[in-house]
Figure 1 (tube, rainbow, N blue to C red):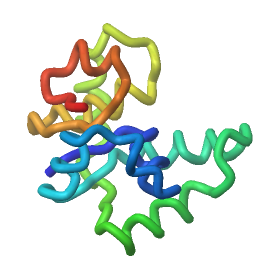
Figure 2: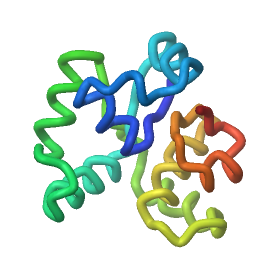
Figure 3: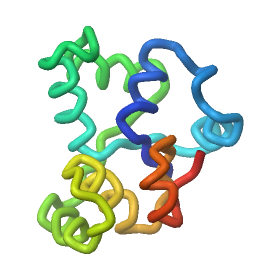
Figure 4: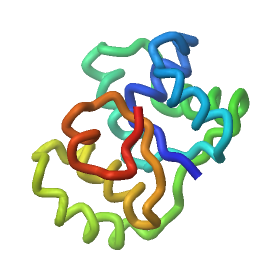
Length: 124
């Protein structure tokens, strides 16, 4: 199982695979692909502030059909509790995305340097 950060989801959706590292592409092709539910909220936020052109539900449904993307269904209280230890960032989206992946020590595909520096399961 491999988690995707929000920007990776966007790049996959718009077909900009070339923005991903070779290692990231290999990992995505090799594992079950999953996102934290908070990625959906961040996508919707980006839509609302006009940073992306499609709504969250459309992006997630499309990627579910095209590449088998799934939304994690772990207990949200457990995820939030895990996120409390991620004091290296004050970005609530990043804290929850990393917490979601770290519960079972899963990989997280991200280009975010802060996450790469602080979560041992982060790959790029």
